[in-house]
Image (spheres, helix red, strand yellow):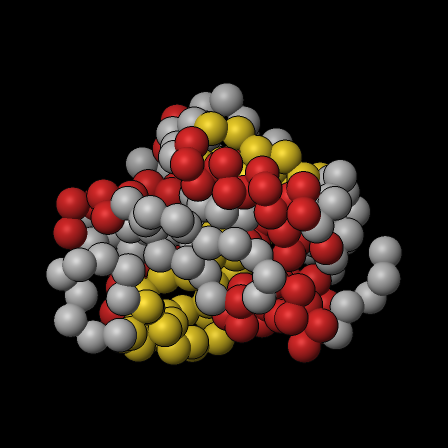
Length: 218
């Protein structure tokens, strides 16, 4: 697998097609290529949690994080999403990049934990932030991810929820490290958006799940 530099990875991810008709109820916002590249580059180069690993992308949407993981040499990356329209774009993206170490599954992400306990080495995700009609969805995704990951979960969460997320990690006996504070450029995707884009403060977090059990995960 060719070693990609950060700029090369970002350049490749800029070619990934996004949502054609984003669904508000699913909080479908694209993961920007710059943020995705920085996340994946850190996961790959600092923690060695992608190359030759079994990776899952929860709420994968059109596959930005999955495609990037596959490019960085994941043994296999599987994207999970409930939306067939997004997965259709995901499939197109994987075919255009001619990636063979990538797959997708249509399902309700929060139903996965019981079936796939400790099935993946690494979970990478940009979950719904749990706003509007999806209150608590960020924690539901995270709980599922922690149960599925053998080594680590990498996730984005609103900085304003950090204390709440830390409390959950403590309850689950999972080590949480904030790797970076990012400015998430949220583009105007829906009719009610008045501004072209809004910056949201977001934490890029690593949750270590190595040698942990599911005891206490309520």
